[in-house]
Structure formats: structure tokens, C-alpha cells
Image: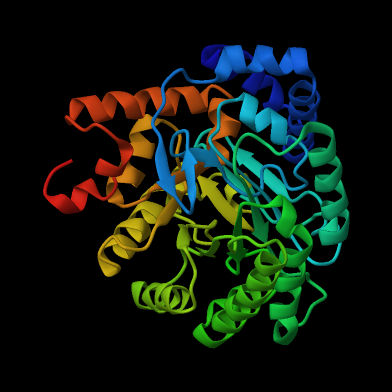
Length: 374
């Protein structure tokens, strides 16, 4: 099925506007995933038969590969992602207020470089409508079979001084429908958002989210949900260490590395799409995100869980992220260029890698490059 997508479906999508193609794909996955018969059909085609369980953030994941934020902003295709064999799905970013995002066109694709540029600007229905949508989904289909993560963003209309209230309000509204929250202060497409990566601002946001998280947990007589912080790749390692330190000191459960980049290589000079303003994702981000993962792992002595995202197009890319220090990995652009069979290909490939290195489980491979052999 991967070849069918690569040589037939992907060329058809290339003739469409990137955002329209994206929307149609999500709509189809929602329709197929919500129908019992077609859901079984999807599972039969795409779900991997391999099991590579790993326990992190209070959950046991079927394998380490999940969906990155931005692909399913409204949480429309939750059943579909499960049917495709992903072990978890991150929906959003979701902001406190509904917002349309930036003017179109705002998504661009380069098949040559297997890269995307987007300047979506957190277009989403807002936390109140998302709450209602998820409540309807849970009522109709029950709790999803895979952990659902929510990417928390800041509303464009909210001043940075009030950002902590924006993030925590969304957390409270979506708490009952979420397994893990990711605090996103690293998107390049909301003005001044990355200023919130400063230690004081970030600490304020995390503390406010922690308070809300504990309050909701007490009401439900259970444990608080894991809080992660997603970092940008456009900073020095010293700045990265400051953010990781704040996250650890403030009680976060881990780090997501990394978001999209605003940097452009000179090799893209002839590619008009990659010269667009916005965040670059896909294959060109692979090396930088892996370097960030490697640095975080070393800095924390492997004691702070890392979620690796950026440029995963195949099992080799996934293995690179895991051996650099990532316990879980995510893809977005990889699904655009490789199609829905990416999940099974990555999981099968990781299984082969474990056997090649004489390892019995994924945990043994996490940070392997730091242990003298990979």
C-alpha cells in the first residue's frame, strides 16, 4: 500500500492546494475511522502485527510511534489514527479562544526535499467547542483505545502577560478527555509566542497549568495528567538547557523536541515553496531535532523522558531518534510524503533493529548511542 500511495495518490495530491489536500485527507480518515466496517478494513491494511510495548508518562504504549500535533487540529480523526496503528495521537494545537489562523495560502509543500512550510497560526475551534466535540466523540464511541494528547497553544488575542491563564483554561476544559498535555510555546506562527520560552514566562505558565491539573485530578480522585513542554529548534544549547531545567524543576514529565524551524538552508534557494515564511518541517529538520534530543539526554543523564519529532520518514530515522534518547517518537510530514503505511513500516523496522542489536525491548534502545554502541 505504501507504493500505491507514493506513486499514485501522492502525485494526485500534489496538484491540489496543500491545505485543501490536508483537509480532504483528514475528512476521509474521519469518515472511514468512524464507520465500524471501514475501520476494520483500515486496521487490516495498515496496523502492524508487531508489538513493541514501552511504558512512559503513566501509560503503556503499543510501540513508540505516534502522531505529532498539527495534523489533526480539531481531533476529528481519532478513530482513524487508532485504525492506522499509531500508539498515540496528539491533537491540536488548541487555544482558549476560537481563531481562524493566518491568511491563506499558509501551507506549502516541497516533494523534492520532503519538506513542508506552514504558517497556519493555531487555526482551531477554540477550547469550548473542542470540549463539546470531544465529549460528543467519547459519548458516541467511548474512550479511545490509544492515549490522546492535546497540544496547548496561546490565543493570538491574549497578551503574553496573560498567557498562563490562556493555557490553563484550555487544560481545564479538555482535562477529562486528555491523557497527556503538551505546552506549546515554540510555534513560530503566532507573534511573540516564542518569547514565552524565557525561563520566567515558561515557569509561570507551567505553574498555572500544574495548579489547574492538580485541582482537576483532586475533583476526579485520580492523578494529574502528564505535562510536557515542546521546544523550538532555533535556539542555542544553553537556552535549551535553561528550558529543560525549568521544566524539570516545575514538575513537568518530559520534553518534546522539536517544533518546526524558521531557519533555511542555502540548498533551498531555488525552491519557492521553502522560501515562504513559516515553520519548516520534514526531512531537512531531522538532523537538528536529533541533535537536540541527544543534547537533552546527555544534559539530564537520560532521566527526563524525551519525545522525538522532526523528519521521521522511515525506520532508520525513527531508530536514530530513539538511540539518541527519545522514548517516544512522532511524525507529521512523514505521513504526507510516505502515506498511512508509514506506521507499520516504522514499527517493523524498529523490530528488526532490536533483533540486529540483540535487544529485547525498546527501552533498551533509548539512548543507545550514549552507551558506547548502536
